[in-house]
Image 1 (tube, rainbow, N blue to C red):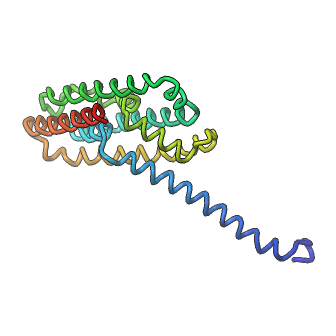
Image 2: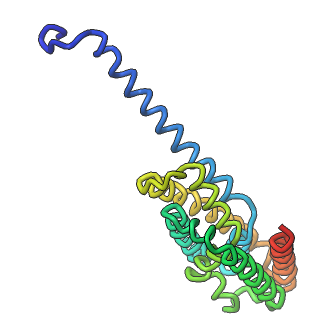
Amino acid sequence: MQIFFNTPELVLRNVPHSISSEVGVMMSLYLSMAAFALAASISPGPVNLVSLSAGARHGLRVAMRHVAGATLGFTLLLVLIGLGLHQLLVLLPWLTAAIQWAGVAFLLYLAWRLAIDNGALHSTEGGAVASFAGGALMQWLNPKAWLAAIAGTGAFAADGDAGRVWLFAAIYCVVCYLSLACWAIAGTCLQPYLQAPQRVRVFNRVLAGLLVVSAGYLVLA
């Protein structure tokens, strides 16, 4: 074979090694991106709490609409930041403050909606929050999402390479969807313990308090 192809034995020996090294580097990159996405998506936050509440209150089917909206909303935000939107924030510092305060106002609005909820399991109240559009809007008004997108693109696509940005966005989209789905499923698992309206009211008020705490953290940060 060596004579037929007229290829030095050293080259033949090094080709598999170079291919395996390249595959190893790419796998390391994929795993690093997935680990970052998991840490940012699965950790408690406003979007996660609403996923939990939607699952407990309305069931998995309704909650997954919120999950899908939040996932695609964040993915769009991540792509736009990776392709240069973060430069706009640098040029217009007031825009960052505006997003922060809009996020605080939105969290307080969600907390108020949960706090005044009557606790009826089959009530249609709160449907706008646990919706596709509501989930997407939450991400754009969620400073945690902006920080995750800026930090992630800075770590994995700092040069603005479009291919790397789309790769990171694709991995993040899958991980984010599964992470938020876990919170929604956890909420549905709580349904057997929330069959009485008074228990639902207590549950909603606890979540409302956590959202207020999140809003307070954003003000003090």
